[in-house]
Image (tube, rainbow over all chains, first blue to last red; front, side, top):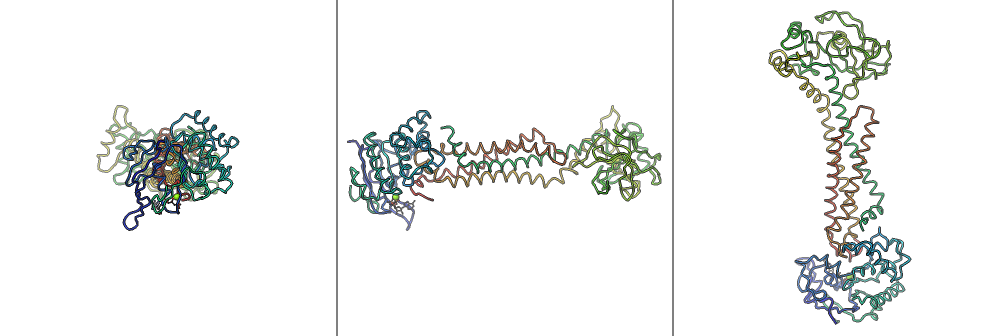
Length: 224
Length: 376
Ligand SMILES: Nc1ncnc2c1ncn2[C@@H]1O[C@H](COP(=O)(O)OP(=O)(O)OP(=O)(O)O)[C@@H](O)[C@H]1O
Ligand SMILES: [Mg+2]
């Protein structure tokens, strides 16, 4: 299997002087194609920082990242282009735009990538239908339940057919039934789209869905 | 999705409408103040131009025509009337004095124009009634006994035969002249120069100026310059007089208003900058998320700027229209200069967009990591 995302010797510090925090400390990580990985560990161990590095939102102080085999150079490449073309994000707090409907929220991702509107609209409809929200296309986030919002944000993450989706605690704001539904959906999506997904979570119960669990502690990977 | 920015605006419509209205009010005030000053300038000019005089003469050191007082000396009058380059016997004394007549029991504001019947300085005929009785004395001695009669502006609403009080004396309205208001809609009261001297100048042989026409063949500027070279008198052309009167009655007193206009501009800029900035602060999270999911700075900037431009354009356009409505409804003469109003509108638009741009630029600097951090 091919490595979709590869990080070698990744290091990230925050702050300066005595206040320096080593959030990620010489981490090597590989995520294979179509894999569902869970990243787990205590609060503050560096999970969010790690996926931000791999997702090209943060730039590492040291180390190298490859996405789909291509090395990333933050000096030479526009990170926003890589993010919109190759990566999907799902956030704990959903972060849908409040003034847009479910459909439009999915379309925004394609709009950023300069896709044509008609095409974006049909893909958004298709994705939302697939995740069981065909009845909610024209609802605003305020009219959706937490579980529905999180599903819309998965649809948004999938919109540009990314190489990988990073989800930071996607179930933290959902009850256990909603979170089970979401995991089922993720499994279905994987079947359908062969998407590679990395999920940061505290929920031990989700482990069983994972192909692999990456355990972190104090900025390092302790088990993978 | 070309309409993304519109959807955002519709979602925040109360704020969008308030911002646009704020700009509308400020812009219309800026334009209205300009229109008031423009109206004042026009009113300051129109009387001066209506006299038909080419040279405006006052005593050396008096402060100038319209402002100071000059003694009417017989020798001057004789000299001017036979004067070099002047139309023979065109030189005429003129009183132009602010007064507070009591009209129908109410003290009002007016300007008394005292001139020689049939000569330069005031109307030769009325639109209703008759002209005042002129004095016979050619030398303007204080004893000249003529009846207290006045020709009023037709717009004052006075009837022929009515009396107004001016300096403790009753003056009878005998005629109405075609309306010719002075600055801030101040009506002119036309009367014989002797009556004006008696009622307003303590019966002394003073006038504010003497005016005259130059011969067709002469350059008024040259004649005025020649007269001005004389030691005892100051002479000005029509152009110089207009400049002086506009400076004295409009520009100097309205300096504070000019300043206010600039401040209003600043306020409009700060208003939209501030509202945009506050809106942006509220949108920080959204902007961070858009950046996190791959929106370029240009994309986010475009989204914000389209809103700023639209709000500014609507606010400025409504302000432009509203200023004309205000001008029509204003209790004084207001005339907005169209070209000036377009220029002001354009500058205001640039100011609003500029400050909105500054706020937007600050807002898009947000770290996309904010998307992971939840509430801010
Ligand atoms: N911008 C920052 N400035 C300073 N320190 C930071 C910053 N971002 C993260 N850190 C620190 O880096 C470390 C790793 O943070 P990170 O958010 O990656 O942890 P996490 O594993 O995601 O924790 P949680 O489970 O609570 O979300 C923490 O000690 C945190 O305080
Ligand atoms: Mg975290």
